[in-house]
Length: 192
Image (cartoon, rainbow, N blue to C red; front, side):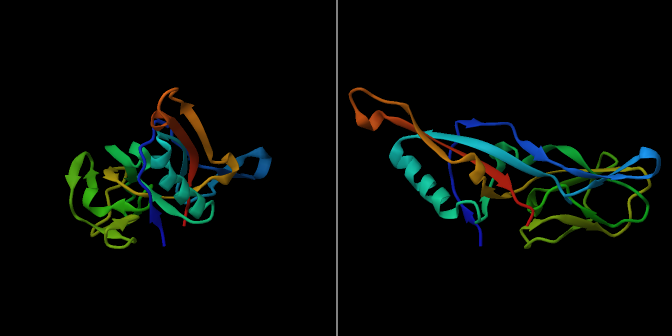
């Protein structure tokens, strides 16, 4: 089960990508690099300003999920591929293509083959609303590029090592209701 929370972050650090590789030493000192993850994983740090009574529900949610319960995050603008990005280079044989991200909204996906709109694909994986791969009836021509743009949702957990921080940013001398607080939390995308 996953949960959803709505917040309006003031500050969002740039999306950080985790794409580790494992090095294997081969003969004569040559290195062979292999991916440790099937897909890259991202992380974010969000700073949410607001009145205390508006931040309390978000803080309550963060305290409930802590670091072991996944929830959905829209990526705060980073969960969308707005310009067609490379998803495959044709090899003349493959018809099932794994997307660079999971939980891609099927309705938002637009695929291009050799810079032309391509509609002969069906979604694979997911729940009927999202997918993580596509299938074509015929393989793509050798060395032709397949690109796509889409929106996705991101499954995250709270990074407890960075400690959730709640602080007062501004304090009114006359009205306590004008006091502005801030809630800072770091999120890590999960692979499962």
